[in-house]
Length: 213
Image 1 (cartoon, rainbow, N blue to C red):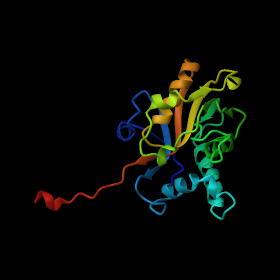
Image 2: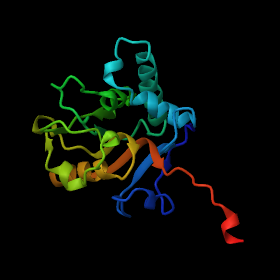
Image 3: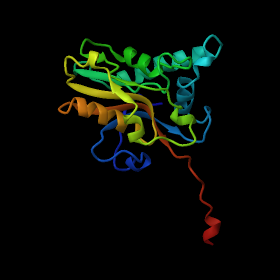
Image 4: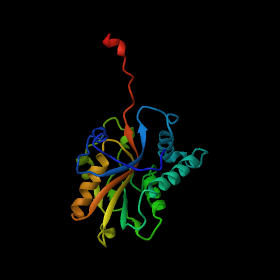
């Protein structure tokens, strides 16, 4: 995985169906859907980052811990430490009282704060637990998530200068759009961006030129 963080552009935008030209999102690597952890360094990083919390206490847990630290380092290097930025992690699919609650994105966010100008605020929480999007047979639409998101008003003061919504993988852009809608409604004059460890790219399909002969 490169330490260079890229911006979603006109060529990559169509891969993320809920994003449009008004969305500014950054990512550090390509996660190839349909391939296993050995396919690429980014795939391996994401597989380790997403290891289930039921692996805690096993030999597998160390790989999740290392992935969180590595991901934080990669994304932190792309942020100007002089910038006044509020990192807002996308909440996990499970609420904090659920046994499968996974705070991996939150932990990554806190590790990214390498200056007094960067802060983490968990401004958005979920009312109810949901099925993880990457395990669900039917992915939600932004309006489904918006109705389940709530702003933690205890954390809204002072008003942020710039918000970066932080998540692990940019797939359809559903979670980002829902978060952006909720945060924009509460902070209408604040610039809001997205940052991801990776964006999902479709698995390449070999074209059989013999069909054209």
